Image 1 (tube, rainbow, N blue to C red):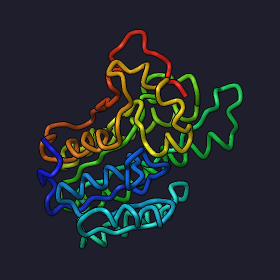
Image 2: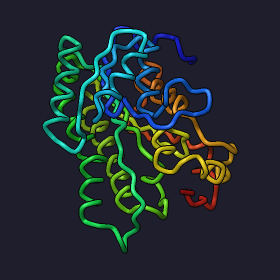
Image 3: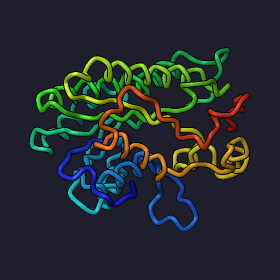
Image 4: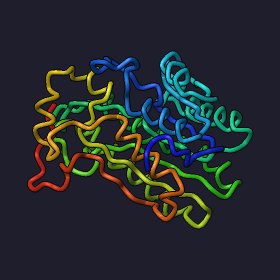
Length: 271
């Protein structure tokens, strides 16, 4: 289904990490990260979107481009109370409803086991797993009360197979998928669906901010499709999973990786 077909009309969505930005692509007026692209797509499909980000100005920039009603909230994914407060703000903005929750925030790393520090491990765990658990836990109350809801966890292929780069990222992204499956199985009979979009090489603002543009061609070279994905393509997958078009889909990991995971042997992620 094409963008613009309003599958989410009248629904309230919260996107954790929806202000993601960084250097813009050539010709790109608004720097586009995965979370920002997801927020814009959900709004285009009719949802009222609440955007959470650690930097309020980034969330506000996303809301300005939604083309409809929205709310920007400041949320520190490493702070449990901040995570809970952001969900409460989303529920209040939706007059008690919360239909869609997208957990997109994530912290990458580059440290293998031998040099992984305790501090790096703890921070990755707090941001990549605990914030998603706390967000889902807080959102379950209103969803269970209304008898419906859809979660989308934005994961990484590093949680499915090793990137050979960062142990904390791989381990926490794998744990994130476990949270997704638990929600799906435990609450399926209460009208709650939970799925993950597992991303491969995406030309996002976060990637450009961390690695610059130079590695882009090398990253694309390991992809059967011969290019990196775009945040808008990640957003399309999320929009499908939280819509009624995926009404009988739960507990699944949809790989959006240009075919990398279908290849054997799986090539290493280039960074």
